[in-house]
Length: 228
Image 1 (cartoon, rainbow, N blue to C red):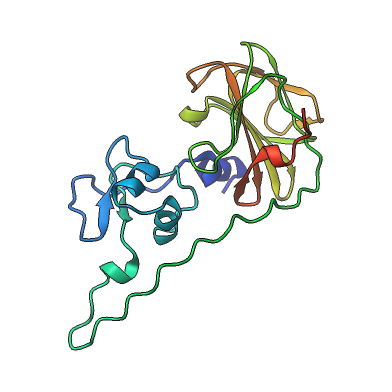
Image 2: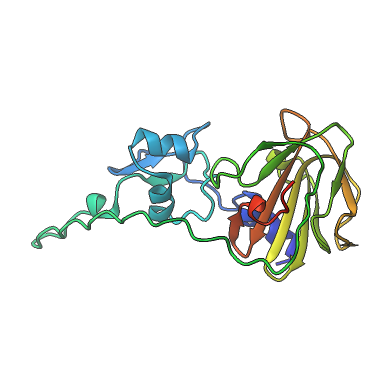
């Protein structure tokens, strides 16, 4: 698969390539059929579960990537599995204990702030997978480190005009909601180089949405950026 297609279809861009099941099919006991406007957080609250549990039971790589018609397990597997005839039901497994958040992964490059505006939204790993930085339309958006532009386009509506820079085999930075893209796919960029003009494409206000990806993990960019 071409690298650009792989980028678009991966959880990095929050886009699923599979076709969802019929939205009107009834959900079996212990499951829920995703409806339009649902979020995993809302479903978790409805069934008194945690987002982490639902993600684990349904093997979701990205908690924000659910689709209308998708069937989700909302009860622990031990509570929804039916015992085989003639055999006693298995003893329900004890709920898994929540584990503390892992320490920040080691980053072997140095990052700088991609825009000069005030920080208006912080990373929470669920509804916000990066940092939102305020600014005026047309303000410069700069590469946080040197690397190669591996995506430049507007293929994901929620991200608007989007640029992704690959810094090494495991590190990507994401720059969303731009007014204009100034760097092209395949272009090498240096740290601090302007790669876009800030805008509000795919957003409700002018801002830069900035993400940091280490391998398959989305991590808090603030842990690696210099103090202001």
